[in-house]
Length: 454
Image (cartoon, rainbow, N blue to C red; front, side, top):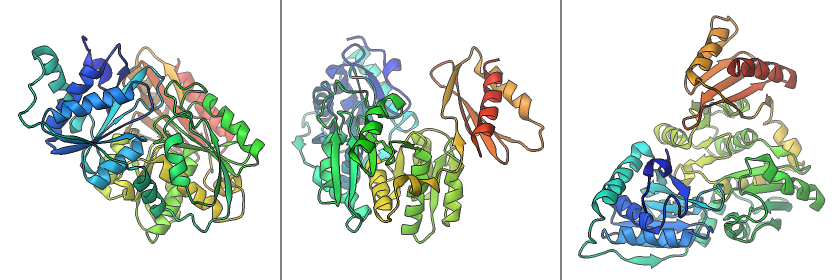
């Protein structure tokens, strides 16, 4: 096939439509290039439940083996299970998944040994250059002594590792509804929850990469509706939804109301700080709620604010030795998990916090949900820079307002803030606003939108 790698090699991963944009032959070249760039003697490879995943994963493994690399294939797994394998085995890894994208997509998330991220600046650009050269000139001949392919089970070890990080054995019994969205949560949840004082009500646990019930993207409110109805209908204590590769988790309370990822970040931060004697750095991106740095300081920790994007979070985790990090998109990062993101570990923290007291989840999270947010609002604009400049002109010079340029433009006052960020791939500006109450938030949101769309 004729492949345009500019369309499928993204900032942090490889992702595109199969077989239109990439196929098993191309996956083999990516495997060979990954072997070359990492210089590793051995790697670990896993895949999700999409119909194209087993073939792509095996082609990648063979491509790496042809370069002399020994490949451990762990088969069906969640992305954080692959990170576990990379960390525990101290090997570079490749996960075949397109996360929450529709069924016709697939992709590769890559990491170095110890689950260290691979992105454009940390190897992905070199991998792309090699693959493009081989597409033009022909693939290299296999080495004289190719590597081996060997299978290995990691699910039970992964589950045991997570359970070792959060003690759930003494919590009160809880009833939890889990919507796996026909994704990898249906594979991992039964093992992780085994033996815990939990009554599990499974929804859509059948592994099916065609997503027959709803898209496996809980960030879209439409995909939470089934879970929100089921939790109160079951009289459950809470609900948890996972995305397709089960590296993100979303929580709803006993009433079926969503719990914001910022509230989950604050709750888990408080627990991780307590585990570390009330000391430690916690990373949060700049569009998480102000609640997060407040809670971190109240619990003795040091909050560090970063740009949006997991590469920035992971880089700051490594630089600062942070114990935990959280994003508005429901990615949660743990020092005890090789600084990698695992929604499952965040879910266990929520269960432990809820089960360690007698009140409902809505009451527990109220202390971590102090402000009113707009959510992310996208606006199509002809000139991103001009609209950002117009916002700056409108607010700079005001005595009660500060501006900063860490990521887009953030405008902040004592009881409100908003951030406007340009999309890197589309002619969009993304607005997030937050204030002490609904009326103030609506006023600030509408003022900003009037300028953005002016």
